[in-house]
Image (cartoon, rainbow, N blue to C red):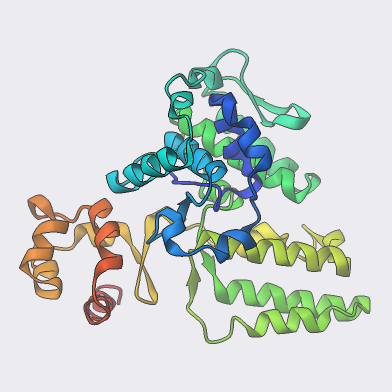
Length: 337
């Protein structure tokens, strides 16, 4: 399963570790770059190489270099996103030569293997046969790992499984922080925290209550990686301050399980208007649907050969006028039942 990840959507920054291994010259950039999600949220859309998705920051030299590093391990990126990064690199004086001679990625699949928690040298994976074994062990040991180690281990496992072309269970993808969020399920678990904090006599019961109220009457799913990371961090801080982190795995789900609470991979969906649409459904719609909804010219552009090209659709969607987006969302509602 292919996932497009950048520094704004990299739980535990485990992918960044891989990038620095491949391009050692980025190590200093990674140390000095501000990776606080709050900082990313302040940036305008034009500060990203992929403005419609707010991915791949290019507002300074450090982040331009890191974005280029992330792009090297991404599956497929729109050509204009790559071109924007290259222009930013020239503007900021980033030496693109560092990306021409990466450390061979094959070392991940070598006899030496790779640790899923590198800092502790735990859970070594040396071959494709090790992947399902490591996955089983991670799930067995999950409750004994810290919240940070849980995410790092699962993210590393996703990366190693991709290298070895091995499928993982959907629950592992969820624990790696790569799925969409059900706001109803998340609100239920936040309210459960409120009740637990009252029993503990914590003064933070009202904070949980206020957070839960924010998700009443909102969209049923959250797919924005920035928002998900912020929510997980906010819950982690509240849990630590209230003492609820001691109950993880017993009566309370940890922040990762609370926020990434479905088994629907984020990259399988595209947001159109206020609703998430399954990319598989969009790709299966007949050319006539796009012609009737968006017109002959746009349909021909997004569906060359009669079938929608998801990369082109993602590029064009942000440029559509509001009334056309609304019409598309309305028409898709019928297909979603």
